Image (cartoon, rainbow, N blue to C red):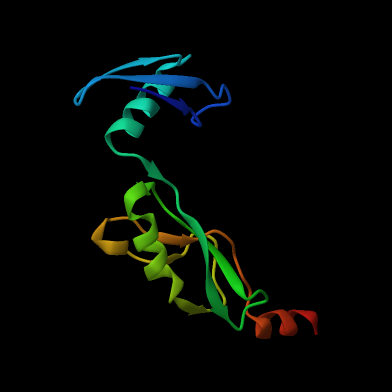
Length: 128
């Protein structure tokens, strides 16, 4: 069986062919650099992605705070993580990079703020 993977590690965007020889052995072809080969190996063994979503934020100048996983999460855990993140609501202000959820699902991966958000009260005081 042959699968095609588009590498997203560098700007080359290589179309990599993964040819399954048996359940534990593959040929990997079409990568232009070692990063592409390692990416394909990772996709075979344990595909992972950076998760990006939003959470509710009270008293902020916006209603939803963009957040992301600090490190890639296993692809098969994404919906489970989103289920946990969906019910979280925090209070403004928040700084970009602040840890919003520590050690999500016991995976040693934090969910962090992707953006700084001022509190409405702070914004009003600054304008006076």
